[in-house]
Image 1 (cartoon, one colour):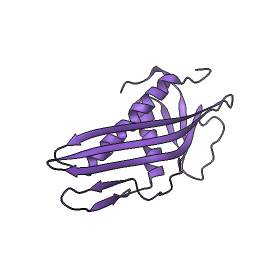
Image 2: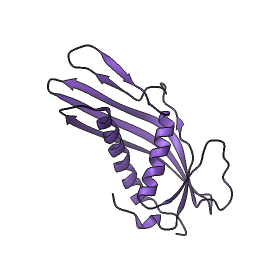
Image 3: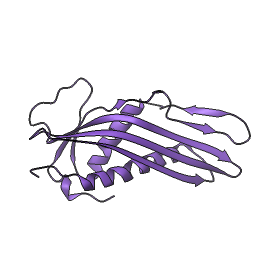
Image 4: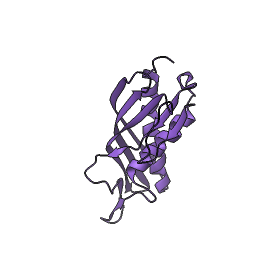
Length: 168
């Protein structure tokens, strides 16, 4: 993932994303091979909205943006950021289906993103979706995390290539 030249000297405030999914607790499922057992996957440490917000903050820093992660309830002050990013989670799901001698993994997500230019108030609204699939011999839950991160990263990389901050 290359650092973007667009990132130079652009301060991005990332506001918490809102989870619009019907079932906000679950983020996936794991179907076992020999049994009809299906485990529901739930976030271990924080909500799906927190996971997405933290991922976007991390990703934008990784590609070179100056990022401010705005905590819930904190108000932005003038000059704090050049761009404000927020949005809604419309889909966020991962699943693992264990078969004979392998596990099939799938991850999909869809985010409605609002990106506002603090200087002129212009806003870009878009819905970005990502998906990925892979097969592993020995399954670990981190395999799903990596697949979901890759699906999000791929779409964000394309989105950032298409958008420009006016005046920068």
